[in-house]
Amino acid sequence: MLKVNNIETWYDLIRALHGISFTITQGDVVALLGSNGAGKTTTLKTIMRLFYDLKEEQPEKGTIEFLGERIDRKDTDEIVKMGIGYVPEGREVFPELTVLENITIGAYTRRDKAGVKSDLENVFYHFPILKSRKNQQAGLMSGGEQQMLAIGRALMSRPKLLMLDEPSLGLSPILTQEIFTIVKNINEKDGVTILLVEQNVNMALKYSHFAYLLENGKIVRADKPEVLREDEDIKEFYLGIATEQSVKGYKRYRRKVRFR
Amino acid sequence: MPFGQLLIEGLAMGACYGLFGLAVVIIYRTSEVINFAAGTMAVFSTYIAFHMITFYGHPFWLAFFFALVFAALLGMFVEFFFLRPAKNPTLLGLIVITIGVQLLFGGLVCWKWTADQQAFTIPFSYQVIYEPLPGVFISQWAVAVFVIAAVIVTLLFFFFKYTKLGTAMRATQQNKHAAKIVGIKTDRIFAFSWAFSSVIGVTAAMLISSRTILDPEFMMEPFLRAFAAAVLGGLMSVPGVLLGGGIMGLIENFFGYAMPAWKPITAFVVIVLVLCVRPSGLFAKHYVKKV
Ligand SMILES: Nc1ncnc2c1ncn2[C@@H]1O[C@H](COP(=O)(O)OP(=O)(O)OP(=O)(O)O)[C@@H](O)[C@H]1O
Ligand SMILES: [Mg+2]
Image 1 (cartoon, rainbow over the protein chains, first blue to last red):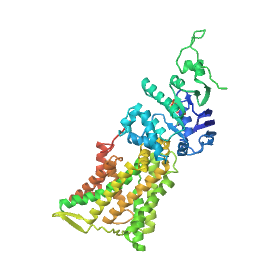
Image 2 (image 1 turned 90 degrees about the vertical axis):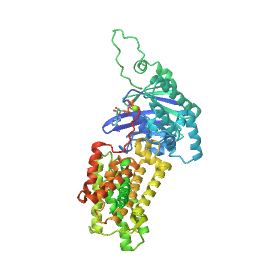
Image 3 (image 1 turned 120 degrees about the vertical axis):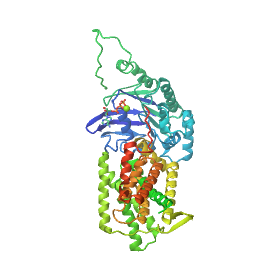
Image 4 (image 1 turned 30 degrees about the vertical axis):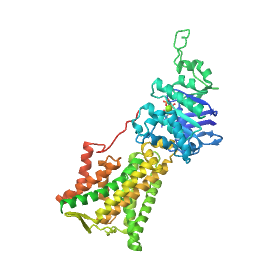
């Protein structure tokens, strides 16, 4: 459904993405993992074409295809209309709008009133707390509630692909669990394909059907979660499961990871 | 002059400052820049109305609406050709751009209509005085100001609160990045805010001009007072700037009556005092971003 082919994104003279390729199959939950500064957020912003302000030619190289159509030179609002929803890192709700206004503005690009109304009910079904707080100012909600609001807002554009950037950031384990369950429901009940960016590798592997590992702007692993879970490097550096010490008793240094 | 009349005329002038301050605030909230060209842009549009009435003999209301349309186009023109091309501008850079626009249009107006003082008349004269209650005097001009200001503020309120475009404007003001994500064409919102601001600005300018004088510089002091009103209101809130405008109008009128020599500098004294005591304005509210 989404096909990213060898994209390169630059911040002035710094190359943040060194030619990334990956695909997302319809109906899947796909995880994009990686440590801080790996380029996960940059990848999502490149797909949404949010760097247009900085520079018109982003990505500098490579192509992005969504449902068989090139989107790497389309405007963000057209990409939203085509069916990509984006929940940005750090929620980014509109602090002085009410919760209800925040949700309904998610349907800004849509014209079908009846569909918008039923989608609003669907958002309230997934997040009952938003319904009880609908007249509150969004800036006064807790971090977790704002995360739910940001997801609800993205759902209002009736996306075919929903991209979530670190939805568990700053949330308690219980709330993280809750959010992941809801995301799973959205995937299964509403049939929305999901691209999940996460630092919480354990959780992400549990809920995804396929995962990519990003390091320094390159994809270094691409496999099913069951396989990645057994990977020595991932075990040690992302899941924090200590493996046995080497024969000489030194701590093992990180192997240089390479993909294909 | 009796106290009651000083009060009412002061409030009417204050309403003009408030309206013009609103024009400043609308741009500040979207583009995060003080538009130093606001005064001159309003002067330019006022001259268009003046020209139509004086040289072509059109009726006032036609000239008035034409000036509004012209102002809207002028606002979009400035946004599109002067501010938009600046990619990743600094705040100072943007301010310098608006000052450049101010000089440009100032020069243009002087060249076309000369620096002579003209009289700009609207159908509501400040020399026609009503006495609705014994001892209370109010000029026709003041009545018109209050009505127009009330209509504009009410329309603005409903526009921002209940329309899709109004909500999108507020959203863009609060978080441009998120606005793009939900599919709002933020560039258009910016152009639209400039048009909006320019239209409100010229309305206020025409009211002010009919009370004072029409020349290329006539908005200089009102702009600074409106700016002071906006600062009083914290540069963000609509009721704040209106209240600020009212305060400015009253201070000016009472000072002007009691100590005429002090009248021109009251605005600056007020700005300095407010910035000393409450740097973010009297009515500023702040939202802390949650993690
Ligand atoms: N606006 C920017 N200007 C310059 N460099 C940037 C900018 N944004 C990100 N970078 C750099 O690009 C690289 C990738 O950043 P990115 O935000 O995509 O990482 P990330 O994988 O999302 O990390 P995190 O998990 O911490 O959110 C980093 O090295 C970062 O320093
Ligand atoms: Mg990130």
